[in-house]
Image (tube, rainbow, N blue to C red; front, side):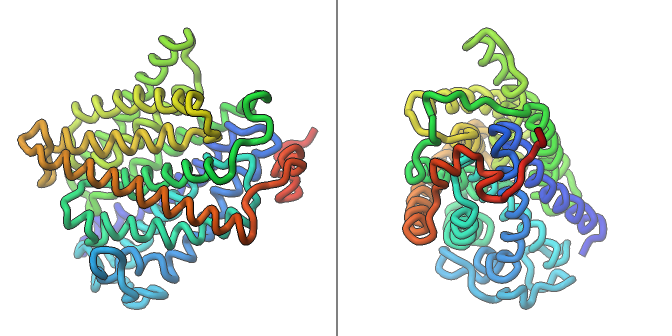
Length: 401
């Protein structure tokens, strides 16, 4: 084992953990004040719920011995065999236990991303049941397929830090949520104005900061590839923030703070699958594309009429999809090459992985939402929505009059 690598991944795991409360602030500022605590609570409690599930059974389903390319075996149930050295782990330079907790933080933030789609209208109990089922039925298989020697890895799909595993999977679930839950009360007639944009910008800044652990840490070593992932991550976010506000200026005549924050997150999403496979200049192009395509993806919501409260599909779905495709175009390092570097077959592999991810995650999520709705229920009542989820679900308020 390598002490420097171990120290680096410990720090990166902490950075990724910090992203989920940051996401709570990012989402919390965009809802109405009567729903701020309920929105933040969803991200915060997921840290607890998913961490326990991951240690008990999630990790082994994702990274246990491959079972037909579909799921991991039960080798590591209750973290059996996951120790303080590298024995039995997927990498030799860091403790197996460290790899487990680093991956735990990815498992934590992914279902938290989904919460932006059903913000302001889901019951807390239904949310907890759905999140539990979704982690085990959707996230763990996806993580195994891509990172646990499953069939997507065998096919040669490139996903450095979670374009498919994290962003497309959560966006597909978000789209399914809009189908099952329907629109918020008053959607289309009542203005839903973000109540605290400084909170949202703070959350975006925390996400940007934490994303260095997310992407650079996915090198699993303190080496040049980690440095490259750090640089590509930062440049893509910067480029996307600029591209988004330029699109806003062209579309409505004003650049907004929310747009700058959304653009930065879009760039971070887009570079995630590519961060360790592309160099700096292509990363800027990927970021510019992320800013433009995700802006258009958010506009698409209005055209299609679905109520994705905080634009999970437009940002994480469109951004993750673009990033996966762009990896097939621009990959040039880390034993990978894309279309522009002499390997057109990689683009087709990326497209196949995108289609499979969207199909599996949407259908499975749709079934889970319907199952939970039919048993414990998902939707808050109209009266509970009127009062706000802070009071109706948690008996507290974010602000005193």
